[in-house]
Amino acid sequence: MATSIIKSDEIRLLNDQVVMSNGALTENVTFPAGHVIDCKHAVMNSEISSISMDTWLPTGLSIDITPKYDNSKIVVWCTFGIAANSLNHNAFKVIRTGPATSNLHIHSTYVNVGYVPSLGSYTATDFPNTDSVQCSYELYHYCDNNSGGYFFNYDGQFASHASMILMEIRQ
Figure 1 (cartoon, rainbow, N blue to C red):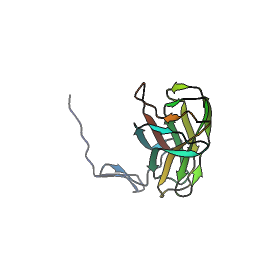
Figure 2: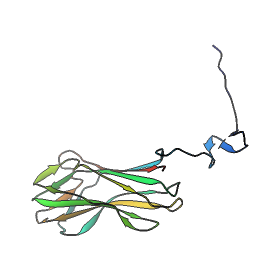
Figure 3: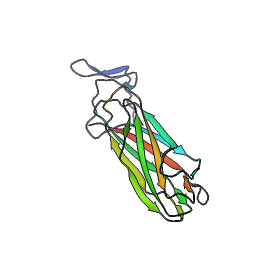
Figure 4: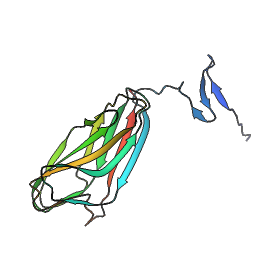
């Protein structure tokens, strides 16, 4: 069977707009609403122990993304494991910096003594309203009644790792 090959430096529309040049899409290409434009991923393998009480503390799990469209939605998804030496209340939130600082909503739960693998997944959506400013997202945790100690990304039993995924969704 014969093989056909088409080679081209660029592809143009009938109105002469270039939509692909040297193998890359140009700004003349419009993605439909709901399309994933960009995806970033980070993994953290280190454990953080804390006896701090009633304080929001950074976990060190963070990612930067620069949205391509000013009306894009950023979907944030985090997974992690925790351990506690006493019953305590835990809460998690993501803080975005750039173009302005924003606290995304808070997820919270009570943790009894022991290891809790993948304490759910923290999910949030954000609308940073920029198409050229880098946005940084970092996961924070809060613990009260923490006199016995608290461990984020606890790796004593199952070599846990925390992860964060950001997806820019075209609106």
